Structures are given as structure tokens and as C-alpha cells.
Image (cartoon, rainbow, N blue to C red):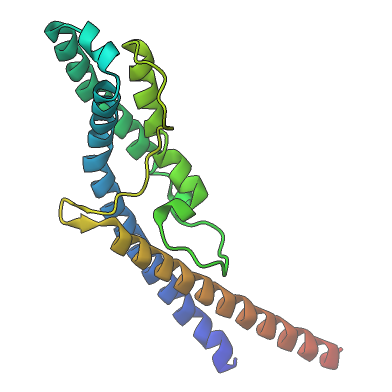
Length: 191
């Protein structure tokens, strides 16, 4: 056997190591989101309350307490739903592309799951009779430290690792093609 076929196990091992590193980044991202998603629900509900003085003035203190209690409960429930969906490993390993990507939102399938937290806010707004929002409710990748984690750095590391994974996969494909061609050539010559 040639040294090419001996390199395949090395590449497979390297691929497993990169996949493991991606899973570690994913765990950090999930930990960051676990802290921020309920706070997002609270921020958005407070923003809607503050920006709607007519609506806010009609609520008594007891209603505001009920609202805040629901915000906490539903924010935690929304976070738990998002985090459960993010356990799907395939979300973290999109098909490789050479298009430069910089934020977690550039992984459309992953970010559509994370953005599901918006439904929690919308549900609460409807439930408590908030007026229509002038601005769309959107969860954007946070650009500040959350629990000693910084999503822009995690995103950069994530995309760099995915590019490395794509490079390894390309080398493995090329190596398998070379091996296959060599074996077919030997067979042709032997028959």
C-alpha cells in the first residue's frame, strides 16, 4: 500500500479532533445563549412597555407584577426550547462553502432555531395586549460579554474550525479518488 492510504487514517483522526473542537465551541455558545435568551425576552418586553406610555399607564401595579412574572417564566421556557433544539448536532455542521462567514447568524439553519425566542416575545405581547411594535422584534447575535463569553470570538473560532473541517474533507476526497484510480489502473493492467 502507498503512503496515501496510510494518510487517510491520520486525516480521519484529525477530522474527529476538529469535530470535537466544534462541539466545544457549540457548548460555549449554548451556555452564552442560556444566559442571554431570557434576558432578551425581558429587554424586549420592557422596551415595548416603555415605548407605549398609553398602554403602560393602563396597567396597574398588580398587572405589571403579573407581566414580569410571566416574562420570567416564559423567557425560561423559550430558552429551554431553543437549547433543546440546538442539541441537534447537524445544525452545527452545515455544508462547507467558501463564502466568508463571520457571525453565528451566518449559519441560517442554526440561527433560525435561536431566533425562535422571538415567538416567546410575540406570544407574551399578544397575551398582555401590547400594541403593535413599530420595530420588528429580532434576536441579533450579542456583541458584549455574557458570562465571560464573547460571541464574536466564538463565532470566529467556529467558522475557522468549519473551514478546517472542509479542508480536511477535501483532502480525504482527493485521497480516496487517487486510491480508487490507482486500484482501477492496477485492475486494468492485471486483467
